[in-house]
Amino acid sequence: MSPRYTMKIVTDFAAAHLLRGYAGDCSRLHGHNWKVEVEITTRVLDEIGMGVDFKEIKRVTKSVIDSMDHRNLNDLPPFDTINPTAENISAHIFKELAGQLNDERVRVKAVTIWETERACVTYTEEDE
Figure 1: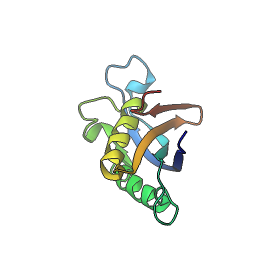
Figure 2 (figure 1 turned 135 degrees about the horizontal axis):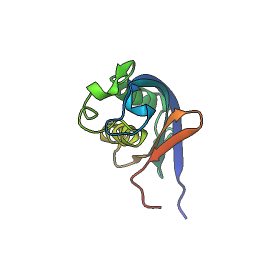
Figure 3 (figure 1 turned 180 degrees about the horizontal axis):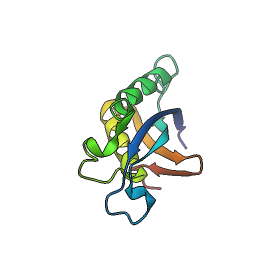
Figure 4 (figure 1 turned 90 degrees about the vertical axis):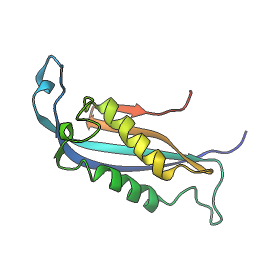
């Protein structure tokens, strides 16, 4: 069995949203302090023994979530046409990160979005 390394960073952003077509309180504008967990995986380390520098994962993640920080997500693409659910937010962040971080050695494995301390969703494109 070949080794697999998974690097993880945790960060956060604050944003408001409302869920269109939802029968409940979340149909009204409200906010969350979203916690974001990003997992990157590799089987091969670089020449200095790293999968990918944590600073690079943090930098790219920050560039993605900065556009959403302290904003109404419903005003931003793609959430101006799809609901800004935790599921859709995690998929959006995953795809943005994968476009910038994936290469022949490393892959974005999963993005977990915590809407509250007790509720989260993980998006991945791996078959389990």
